[in-house]
Image (tube, rainbow, N blue to C red):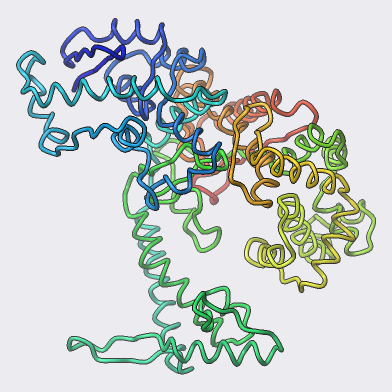
Length: 571
């Protein structure tokens, strides 16, 4: 509709029919500040401003964002959790201006949402309220920037927000007929589960508003929880109010088949009422938050970063006609970044040595649990090997500990992670033995790593991210332990994503598009004719090269697959 500029004292508003491109070009040469500026840059590109010049400005640290700067400041002090919506006021421009400058900006919907009616009207003929709103948008962004603290990580975060904005704008397609079939299947399973609950007394039928509906017997569920845990000689989990906890985890761990079925019923209800409806759009434009406390991203409406692994949800995402998906993810990413952090913080790392030798850290743990040689464990990775199933179970345990223990997870947390993320049940006593007598001896750097982290938190009240300089304050011990390697992984992934997006729009991958980003995985929509022979190898090399400067001491691999749908129909 218009482009507004400000130097902190004066503001200018140019109509979309004015000659605005030279002014934008001049601004980019000097350096641009915007609030949620990635959106503005995408709008400029969509309206004919050369995308190449925008990418060049980002790469040259010529574009920064007051939203990202505010978030970085709050992350450094540990205040972000209280500010971020929906719990807190959020990071909209008017919210931060009121917080920092004490100025109440107009939110009049009669102005904000009615610019379209001025689409053919010169700015000189606009009502004063419309001109003032557009002018203040730039003016107060400038004034906010002027009082904010500079951050060494702000330009990298701005770059990340831009390619993520382009990804969200492009969107990803959904196979609606397949989703219909998924819904029908789950509704049938849900109905059967409900009947089973009625039969076991955990639900009953009641007549409400002239209709017979099934309602859960929560009181009876609580009584069964108490009895089930008593039968195991364990105390039952409790709510904050002291009563029996009846959530899914409590039911699953109860050992009672009827309570397990109750948990399944709740899971099916979530799928039918929340997860499936969220995908019912032919083309999804999810909302990505490009920066949360850990340095990672988040996703909502729907959460494409956390689709269920099982049950057919991921297979419902498909590329546009004539294209396939190339999915590329960094191998053992957070083990690699933990090893690099140990090299920097401790000075040495057995994990780094193992990874650089090409060893499988999960098989190393599994081999020790089974009393096997490492070579025998590697042979058993073959699905045709008679001991493959045994090896795989213990390798999953190895994954749970390798990925959980570096972050300071306790025994109970590791048991929970083993069951819920890797499908293996491990008793607490055995997990304690694995953590300290197997994992701890294999990777002894964990002790000095934890000691240095604890010292940093006690001394400075914060941790500072390797290489990017981002600080995070107000951290617990486990957050502080996770922070260095989880944050390093996030920094690498965002940096690599910018380089990948640039190649997709302007370089050797022109015509390809990133459609989803899941922390260490990129889902790229590419023309089918050259996917396996040309595009996939290029993407793999680009990601490896992008990560190398961040990992001077540890090798990192990239796994690439080509498929006709996300997690299905592999080519």
